[in-house]
Image: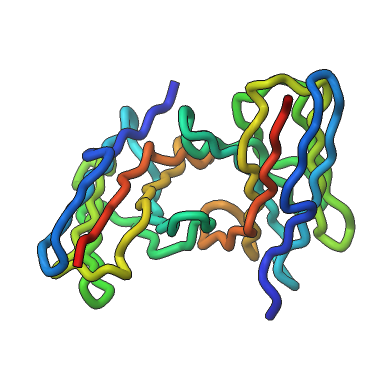
Amino acid sequence: KAGVTQTPRYLIKTRGQQVTLSCSPISGHRSVSWYQQTPGQGLQFLFEYFSETQRNKGNFPGRFSGRQFSNSRSEMNVSTLELGDSALYLCASSPTGTAYEQYFGPGTRLTVT
Amino acid sequence: GQQVMQIPQYQHVQEGEDFTTYCNSSTTLSNIQWYKQRPGGHPVFLIQLVKSGEVKKQKRLTFQFGEAKKNSSLHITATQTTDVGTYFCAGHTGFQKLVFGTGTRLLVSP
């Protein structure tokens, strides 16, 4: 089986812009979760989608949003980018949810200048 | 809010020495997962513990979930250079939100 894929792998944006990141889960996995990883804050949970519905959400501002499509692919969007949004954004998929083994993608490295 | 701390933050050992990282939560967890992230890589699932006092072994790795389900540990016997990376614990709170620990970075010198 192919692993979790994320596009793009690297992105440079300017403050105030918006960005959309994409994640394709492992075939058959219905849960997709998103995480932000920074040296200062570590790995932080953004949100989880299951069967196109947001099932759980972390403590991030409303500028961070996501969605999941019927084929389980997911996108996350960050609007009005701030310098502090520079991070590695990781997507993880699981057959049923975060309560079980999660398979992470390689991540998207976002730099905001 | 919910916090999961890991100690130590960093440890440098000689190949063959043992290593232990401890994970401590401010609240009870329904389960605990452990992940390993190699430098420049992404987290890879190692194991999940669910029961109070549970102990699981994977070759040289031993994982333990505390009796109160608020702490966990990962012990590596006779480290190898391939063990290099950052080890994260992650647990679910009562609201089923997954919270990752702060991570322990392990460096192994040959």
